[in-house]
Image (cartoon, rainbow, N blue to C red; front, side):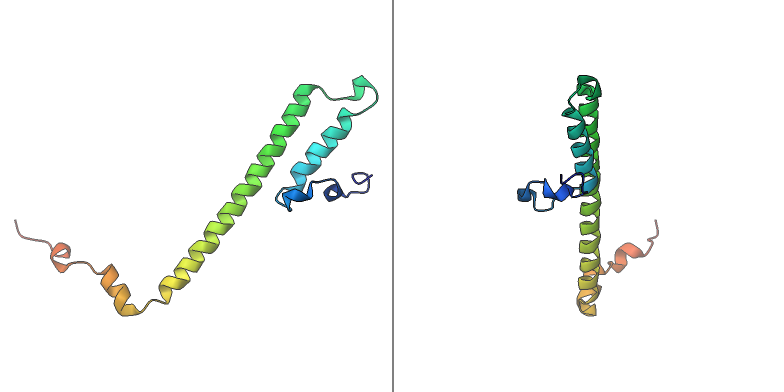
Length: 107
């Protein structure tokens, strides 16, 4: 009933707290519905089911990777902002190059 009405979230375990990709959930739900068809010739083979599960896992991993990338970008921007607010004297001391290294020496 939930799936027919387009409410996939109505059948998802609330313990997941929304930590899933809807596209992967739809893939699994649709394949699960095919598995309970009354006639065997209408049901998918186990290899089709395994392939669909693997595809859903790949979608989840991709979504997780994108989320991690977004978090890293946010942290990088946050670090840049914090670095910009350092007082300039401290930044100069931190980034100073010893003049003896910078000048070429006669051989």
